[in-house]
Image (tube, rainbow, N blue to C red; front, top):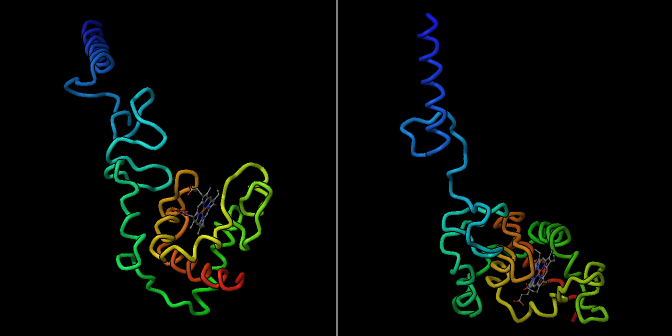
Length: 184
Ligand code: HEC
């Protein structure tokens, strides 16, 4: 009886030892979540370059990290830019205003006023953020360009694709177009 117990104990200890010393053990007692697609500490990568297939907390799916800005070129040209599928009706403008005030105004304000450093006259810019008074720039941008800028963010601007829906982004653009006119 005692021998059987010792043999069993030995087998369990050996199994545990194999599992801990080599993750290729024939069977595994501990199935942790270590080996999945993610950037592990001390692995090569940076704040902007992640392993292919990684999904970041902001919802960006990295197909090809080098390809993050490929949308820029077609969206800069009025002939190839994605058209806004939503009319600027009251419903669109109301949602656009709500979402603009929620996600954009804090940095960009909704007027063309600038602070001493030349950025939009907002509290966050006085504290060191560098967001332009965006409605002075948007008249030169296509709807598709602004749409993707919001979705993907920029070098400094955060990615807001996870916070806004497809519809929200187009509605924000419809609202921005009314702000541009107001400031003429
Ligand atoms: C945390 C601050 C911040 C927020 C919030 C923010 N932006 Fe920006 N945005 C910036 C900064 C900084 C820049 C300039 C640098 C850059 O492009 O990253 C910028 C640039 C832009 C540009 C100019 C792009 C260009 O190529 O010159 C547009 C258009 C824009 N933002 C639209 C928006 C809209 C619409 C929202 C809301 C959905 C928004 N931003 C929210 C900080 C912000």
